[in-house]
Image (cartoon, rainbow, N blue to C red; front, side, top):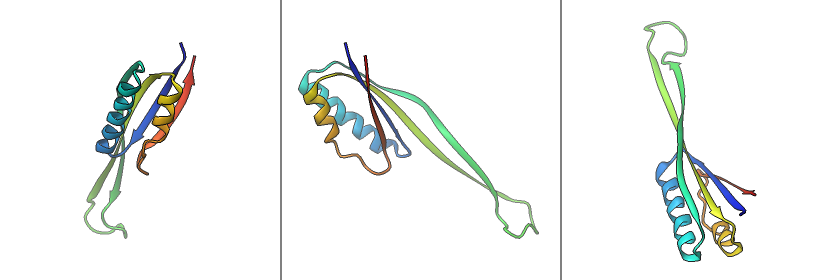
Length: 102
């Protein structure tokens, strides 16, 4: 049976969870098999910079971190369900990728 795999990634976990919930609701309404959302490991991007730009003075540093949260959802292929998923409002912070699997 063919499936559609939906990959979601975002720095904002709340928006990511809202989109996952809306995709779950669509799957329940259209009675399509769904597995997920499966949380993938969170990627942490760390960046350390020195506080003083000139280099003189105390050697103190600032640490910045950006977390990228990821989810994977597998949906059974149904034309109506996929059209509804395509119509879901996706914020700019969230990246979505849909691919068809056999």
